[in-house]
Length: 256
Image (cartoon, rainbow, N blue to C red; front, top):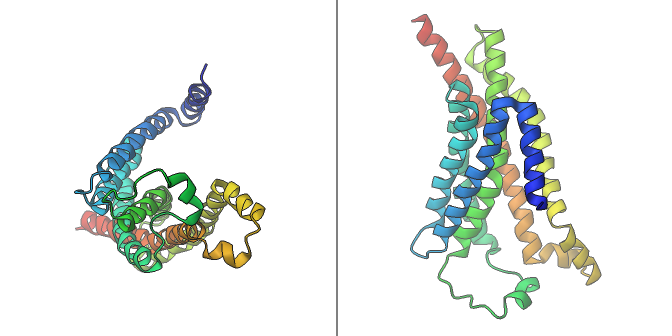
C-alpha cells in the first residue's frame, strides 16, 4: 500500500476517534482546502489575473471551509471569520509594500542553475505572487488565533454575562498574549524545519553570517516569517475587538 494512502488512513482514523464528526469534517476539509489552493494556483499562472484578488477570494473560501464547514455557522465562527478576513486584507496591503521595497521577489542566485534551462519571461508579477505566497502560508495561523480568541471570549462572556465591553476586550487580549507566544514560535520553527537543508547547504559552501543574511532566498523566507508573525499579532486585537462588540451587542439586543 502506498505510504501516503496508509498515513492518510491513520490520520483519518485518529481524527474520527478523537474528534468524532468534527474530526471527520476536519479531515475532509484538508482535501477541500487543497482543492481551493490548487485552483488558485492554476488561475495565478494566467498573467491576465491579479494574484492579489485571487488570494483574497481563495482565503474567503478557505476560511469558510475551515470555520463554517467544521464548526457550523454560529456566533463564534462568524466572529472568527470576520476577524480573519479583516486581518488578511490589512496584512496583504502591508506585505505588498514590504515585498516591493525589499526586492525579495523572484529567484536567488542559489536557484539559477536549476532554472537555467527555463524561460523567465512568463508575464507574471512576482511581487504580487510573493505576497500571495506569504498570505497563503499565514492564513492557517491567523484562523487558529481567530477561532481560539472567539472560543475563549465566548466562554468568558457566558461565565460573566454582565461584563462590560472594555473588560471583555481586556480579558480577550490577556488570553491572546499566551496564544501569541506559541503561534509566533510555531511559525519560526516551521521555517527552520522546512529550510534546514538550505542552512546546511550554506554551511557546506562556507557562507559567512553576513552572506546568509543577505542571501535573497534566506531574506525572503525570514521576511515571510516576520510578516506572518505580524499577521498573528495584528489578529489578536482585531479578534478581541470584534468579539467584544458582537457579544455585548447581542446582550443589548436581548435586553431591549
